[in-house]
Length: 475
Ligand code: ZN
Image (cartoon, rainbow, N blue to C red; front, side):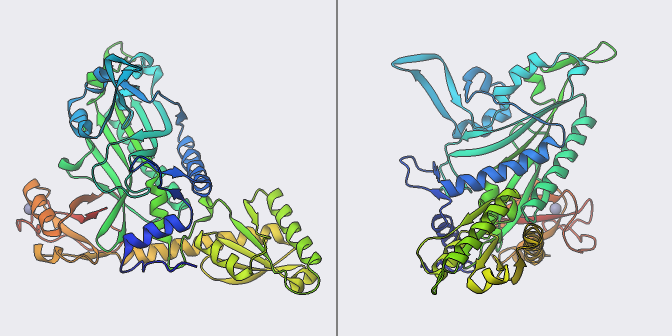
């Protein structure tokens, strides 16, 4: 048994301990910030990817996979983009002992790998929209402290890239992505705010960026992903143009949608507790763990009952584990709680005789399920668990924000601040200094609570053009 650090007072220590003790990743690899996906973490990641794939493909996006290496000349075509990523890229400069004529970049993201090829693929308006995505690893030379899932150098990455006929179609694609992320986050029981980043913090090369942020520890926030409208910023330099219906040549308008293994970090951070991980059913490597209580004279009926539970749930398509080892039941309960399994079924002699099992979900709620209605009842318990997890997270989320009406009120570290902002960069920087963090931007889809109308700007006092904005300390 390990004593986890206290989540409320030592969040990062708690987070690192949970990730390690639950066996999600192994950081004992020879390159800092490049972690090993161990079997349990890999299984969770695979389920997470299934959620992303299901939701993005429902919007008409199709999978592709581009090569990992990008020629330096293609990488350098969009100036803002290169400026944003230059310090973070890994270079491949040799093939064997030979210096390469054109050095290669290990992709930090795939705009510059894909867009020269999009310029070939897209010829006519009939080729549009082009909506493709890939789930691959990308590489960034992080100089800050690395943390599993939050900040790593080899990142498991989801990226959608699209080409649209015009700005309006690209704006519609952004909206479609926001809706897709809403469904993804709902499956993961993760509350978040869609926030339009200020000009100085948008994705390098973007027209605008909308990011998804969730509070994880007082004023600290975690960016879960982002959607970007590129307008013609990339299609220009990369020559992605098409022949319109009227015969004219036009540049495509582009969008991207990026997510990563951070979502797994967010699940750990948002749902986890003092017993360890709490996994929403959608990403749990095992949705159900069965623990036979083998004490007493006749273990055979208990073993038979446990085996029947496993067989039937497997046949019903559930991810199930039967823990029939020699340990005491208490040690097994502890382990599977630490690893976040949504539902535990316990079966002892009395239950085996009564053709029932005791069900305990990861929020500690106890009930009974019958063998007669097993598949349906387990399904119901899991759905109830997900709903309860979702409302618990939503309640904490609503309490994670506090209003600040003056700059000094930004200095506390207890909660994310919402404030009135005129949109000016100078005021934005005053806000960032006052909170020792970032002006996250303006909510794209409203605030998650009733806030009324914003007052005068917190930075300059103007009542003109003021909007609600969020400020916090990004992890
Ligand atoms: Zn102002």
